[in-house]
Length: 489
Image (cartoon, rainbow, N blue to C red; front, side, top):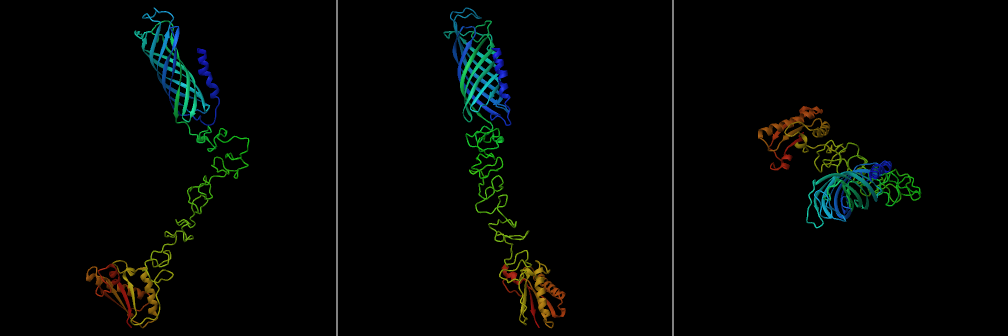
C-alpha cells in the first residue's frame, strides 16, 4: 500500500508538470467551494464491515502554474459513521466487549496539498495531508452501551484520488476515493495491536471563481490570447489563434479566399470581410481611432477625430469661417469676433466701442463727411468714448475723430471754433464745472498739437447747466456728457 501511495503522490505529477506552456493554466489563482456525501468502509478489529455514511465540506485554492497541471491547498471538514461486526461475541478489549457489532460517530477536519491536471472538461486530481478525528460515541449492537475510549481525538493522515467533470463555467461534478488512517486503535471501541482505518467514497459538486477570463472560450486566457474573438469550436494554437489547414495568413479568423484585408495586423478585431472594424464608419479603423464615437457625416482627421482646419475651437461642420487666421478670437460660429457689431472684426477694428447703427470705415471707426461746414454746423464728441471715466484724458478713438476734424479746420484757416465741455448732474456743480473746463482745454490742446492756430480756438467749461437729455436716466446722462465743437466764424 505504501508503495502504491508513493507512486501516486510523487510520480504521477511528473508527466503533467513537464508539459510547460507560455501562458498560465486557466484555473490559476481560483477558489473552490465543494460539498459532497457518500459512504465509509471500516477495517479494524472487527472482521466484517458495514457501510456507514459520510458528508464533507471543502475549500480549495489553486496556485498559478504554466502547465496543464497545478498545485492547490485543500481544507476540509466532515461528519460520518463507521460500522463493524464479528461472527462471534467478543470478550476481548479494554473494556471487554459483550457485543459482536459496533457503531461509531465521528467529526474530522484536515488540510493537505492537492495536485490536479486541467483537461478542460475532465479534471483528475490526487491529494494528501494530515487531519484530526474526534470519536465521540461508540455504541454496541443494541445501541444501549456506550464504551469508553481512552482518547477522543486522533491525529493521522489521508490520501485521496478523484476527478471533477466540468458541467458549466464555474460548476463541476466530483467523485473521489479516500484512504483515512487516523493512527488510532479505538474507533471501534476495542484496543488491540492492530490500527484501525477506513475508506470513504464520496460524490458532490464544486463551484469555483477567480480563474482567468477566456471570452471566446478557446482555452487561452484573454491576457495571453492574440485572437480574442475566435469563433466557438475552432481549434486554436497556444496563442489562441485558429489552427487550420485552410490558409489564414493574418490569423484573423477569416480565410484568405474570403479576406478582403489579408494583411490585418495581429490581434485587431475584424468584420465579416476580414477588415479592421470601423464602428463609427468614419474611415478610420477602431484600433487607430482616438474618437471612436464620431457622429455620422463628420469629416475627420487621420486619428478619427472631427476636423477643425483653422484650429479655432469650432469644428468644420459648424464653422462658417473655416479659414480664420491663427490666434484670432472667434464667436460660436467660428468667425472673428465683432464686439460692437459694426461689421469690422475686433482684430482690425480700431474703434471697438462704436455705438450701434453708426456707419464706420474699413478700420471700424465712424465715417466723417468732409463737406464744407456752415456756421450752424456742430461737431459733437460723446463723453463715454472721448475721455477716460472721470478724467480729462483723451481716448484713442477721440484722437482719431479730432484728427479728421483738424483736416477740415485747416481748409479754412480764417475760421473760428468754439469748444464747449458739458457734464451730467452727477457730483457737485463745482467739480462738474472744473471737469468740463479741463476736457474742453484737453481738446483745444490736442487740436493745437495737430497744427490748428491757438487764436482760432476758444474753450469753455459749461458744467451741468445745459443738459440735452434727462439726467435721471443713464441714457440721458450719457448724452449730456459731451464735447461740442462749433464753427462760429
